[in-house]
Amino acid sequence: MVIIRKLGAAALRYLRITGLMGLFLAKSFLYAVIPPLKFSRLLKQIRFIGFQSTLVIILTGGFSGMVLGFQGYYSLSRFGSEAFLGPMVGLALIKELGPVISALMVTGRAGSAITAEIGIMRISEQIDALELMGLNPYRYLIVTNLLAAIISVPLLTAIFDVVGIAGGYLVGGKLLGVGAGTYFGEMASYVKMEDVLEGIYKSISFGILIAWVSCFKGYYTTELSGFGAEGVSKATTQAVVLCSVLILVWDYFMTSILYH
Amino acid sequence: MIRIEDLHKSFDGNAVLKGVSLEIDKGEVAALIGGSGSGKSVLLKHVAGLMRPDRGRVFVDGNDMTSLSGKKLTELRTRLGFLFQAGALFDSMTIFENVAFPLKEKTKLDSEVVRQRVSRELERVGLSGSEEKYPSQISGGMIKRAALARALITEPEIMLFDEPTTGLDPVIGLSILRLIDASHKRISFTGIIVTHEIPRVFDIVDRVALLMEGKVYFYGTPEEILSSRDGAVQEFLQGKTARASDDEKA
Image (cartoon, rainbow over all chains, first blue to last red; front, side, top):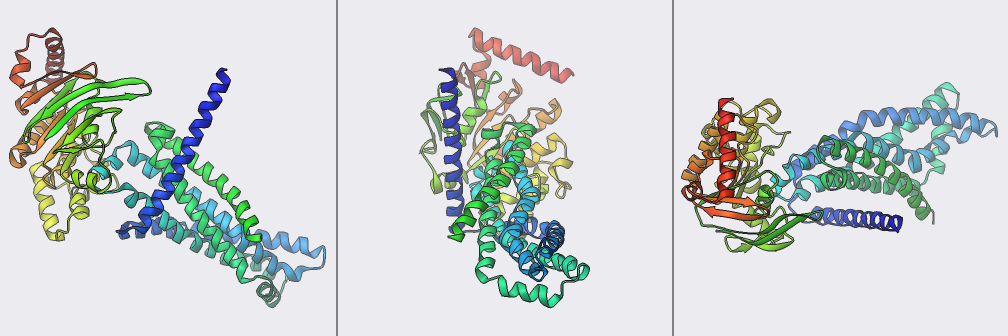
């Protein structure tokens, strides 16, 4: 009986949190379309989420492409199909690895910081102070992060893809001898616009997901994760874990939807 | 101006407020005293509309804070100032930016006018020269003064103070109380001060409300509470007075 009661209580709690998350996202989008927009804060967040993530995206993109170049070349050479290295690297990066790895990198670098910042603002009553000044915390803190992530994540993904393709060529072309014409020519023949769009759609949805989960976990730190530094630390960990898992789960659903 | 009617609030089944009723007239300042955990700060947050009660109502200038939302609540809040216990300064902004923030966000004042008003307000609270410092670079007393300057910069009609002297030494605490008194004389706000600063706070308030067991046990002028023969009131006051004089000696 006690177990059933505990299970019921846990189920109700998760149901409540899910509902709260849904409402949070709906309110965020509502305030995003109703002016005024805190433009200077938006620019600041684009700089933080986007510009300041560029180096890590270039590094991960470059090495991901180089690894793909190696692995792809040795796998394809078994079938005598080294000429298809370009399309293989291009498709893998544009459709899958670019959006997913970029989103995971942004989660680790910016998502965690967003949760920590909003969480600290919550526990130190700075969000209450905003409300008491007659300012809407959603408009000031959440909408700006949401729009900044929607703008930044696809751009970072594009950088990841370009650097990754260059990295693939560096290994496949310069090191292992696949010609530039073959590498890039075959890529242009096999990578279609819909593949590029698939990557863009995915990265936009990942941007929404990162901002949504990171802001939500920070905003409800005291209610869902606890008080003080421990609460913020828990909220940050939960945000990164949940974001990472949701990115991979959502990626599967997006792929299956876009393929049909 | 502020009317609280039969306010009830519980947290996880623990009743904190069990039917609080209180009325504060326009221009009056009331001290809200009571033991730790008696619900003083919770009551203050209900007045600010930061918490919703389980039962009861809070009227601020005729508006029911318990049912207000959206634009009406925002409008009312622009007439209200709140000094948080820990200051709640924005830690990524300088002191100047913190104090200027309400003016920049809620008014269309020219940046030069904003600068002049902020400088004047910081001078009043004795923080001239600290404009470019961040909250983490200044002392607890300076944080309280900066937070007071931010709360007063819009010259609110209603001011709510949540333990303005907690964590400060008696000398700095007294300076904060004097600043509150001076700002009241200048702006004539209606105010509530949640405090343990007994009896010093009695010099600057018009009324005192003693909160006990989730209800207002005593409400009257400072003179009335000091001359009260009620055993519980005297026990509370004597305990607080003895602690205050110990603090001063220390």
